[in-house]
Image (cartoon, rainbow, N blue to C red; front, side, top):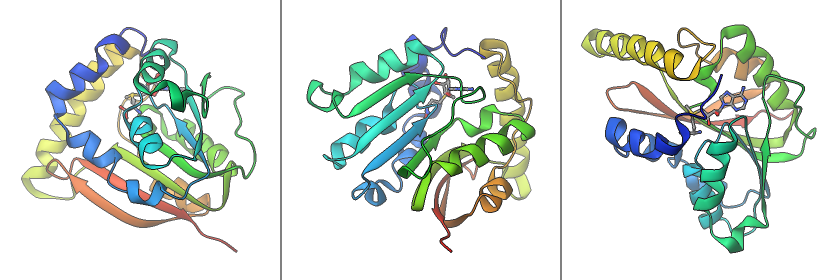
Length: 213
Ligand SMILES: C[S@@+](CC[C@H](N)C(=O)[O-])C[C@H]1O[C@@H](n2cnc3c(N)ncnc32)[C@H](O)[C@@H]1O
C-alpha cells in the first residue's frame, strides 16, 4: 500500500471532500489528551491531529509512525520548530515487524487508518498496539462506520463502496470493505467510554479506555 502519491494533495483533498468533519472527529476528545505524557500516533499521515495534540499539551512526547515518508514530511513541516524535539517520526509498516515499546504509552491515536486493513490484519494490529498501552491508556479513534438503519444506511453503503474502490486504485489499500474494530479492541482489554457520530452517522469519533485489572 502506498499513500506516497496522495501525500502532497491529501490535506486539500480532505477539505474538498469532507470539509472539517474529519478534523472535528479527530479532535472530539482533545480535552482527554491534556495530561498524556507519551503518545503513539499510528498512520498519522499529514499530522492534523498531531498539530492539535502538541498545541494543547506542551509536555507530551510523541511517537508518530507511518509507512509514507512524504506524509511524515508534511506532518513534520506542520509543527513548529520548538515542538519538533518532542516528536519522533518513524517510517515503518505497522503490519511488519514493528512493535511498540510494551506498556509505554498513555495515549494512542489512530485516525482514519484502521479502516485500511483486512479483518485478520486488523485483529493482529490491534492486539500488537494494545501491548504498547499503559494500564490506563486512552485510545482515540476516528473512522468510517456503516449507519445503523434507514436511508442513512443506504447512503452510507454507497459512499463506502465508492470510497474503497477509489482508494484501492489510488493506494493499493489491502481492505476491500470496512471492518469494525470494536470486537478486537474489546478483546484487547479496552472499553468504549464515548462515541460521537458525524456526517449522517458515517463517521465516528471514539474514546476507548483500557480496563484495568
Ligand atoms: C487514510 S490516511 C489517514 C491519515 C491521517 N491519520 C488522517 O487522519 O487523515 C492513512 C494513513 O495511514 C498510513 N498507513 C496505511 N497503512 C499503513 C501501514 N501498514 N503502516 C504504516 N502506515 C500506514 C498511510 O501512509 C496514511 O498516511
